[in-house]
Amino acid sequence: MYPGYFISFEGIDGAGKSTHIDAFRHLMQKRFPQKDIVMTREPGGTPLGEQLRKLLLDAPMNLETEALLMFAARREHIAQVLEPALAAGKMVISDRFTDASFAYQGGGRGLSLSKLNTLETWVQGRPDGSLLQPNLTILFDLPGEVAEARRSKVRAPDKFEKMNLDFFEKVRQEYLRRAQENRKRFHIVDATQTPEAIWNDLESLEIIL
Ligand code: TYD
Image 1 (cartoon, protein in one colour):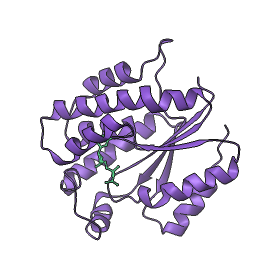
Image 2 (cartoon, helix red, strand yellow):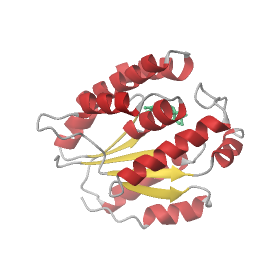
Image 3 (cartoon, helix red, strand yellow):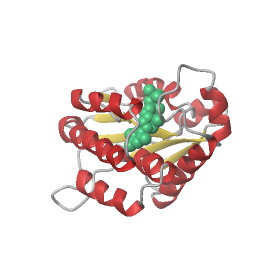
Image 4 (spheres, protein in one colour):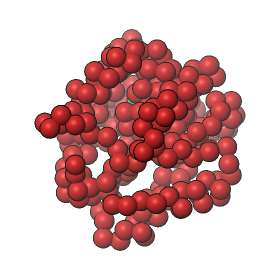
C-alpha cells in the first residue's frame, strides 16, 4: 500500500504504553538504522490536532461532537503527517489511532459501531477503496482495576482518566473485540507483567518491513 510502515500503540489509560514507546522507537532505530522514524500521537500530531486535543481532553461535550472532533483531528493528521511520511517510506509510530475511538467513544461512551465505521471509512478511505490502517498495533491489555491503581499514582487525571472502572472495562472489551477482528494486525501485550517482561515481549516481536 505504502512503502512506509505504520505502528500504533494502544491500551486503556494506566496500561503503561507511554513507559515503553520511546524505548521501542530506539529499538526500531537500532534494528532498522536506515529508516527514518516519525513519532506522533492522537488526538494531536499536527498544530490543529494539538489544539483539538486540549479541547477533547478537558472540555465536557456531546458524545457525537467528541467523536467528530477525534476524527477531524485524525483527518488532519493523516493528510499532514501520516500519508506523506508513509509515502516517503518512513516508519511512523503513533501513540493511539482509530482503535482508540472504537474503544473510548464506542465501547466506553456507547457511540454506535455503525457511526464509527462510517467515520473510519470516510476519514481513512483511500482512492482505491482501501482503508489506511496501521501495519501493526501493539495493544497493552490489562484489567481496569489494575490500570486504575496505577493511574492513581501519577499526575492529575484528564477528562477520560476521571471515568469509572465500568467505563474502562468497556473500553478494554472493545479493544479486545477489535483485536479479535484483526488478528494479523494486533499484537497483544499482557500489561500486568513487570516492565522487564513486557520489554522482552516487545524485543522479541518480529517486524518485517
Ligand atoms: P493518552 O494517549 O493516554 O495520553 P497521555 O498519556 O498524555 O494521557 O491520552 C489520550 C486520551 O484520549 C486517552 O484517554 C484516550 C482518549 N482518546 C479517545 O477517547 N479517542 C480517540 O480516538 C483517541 C485517539 C484518544
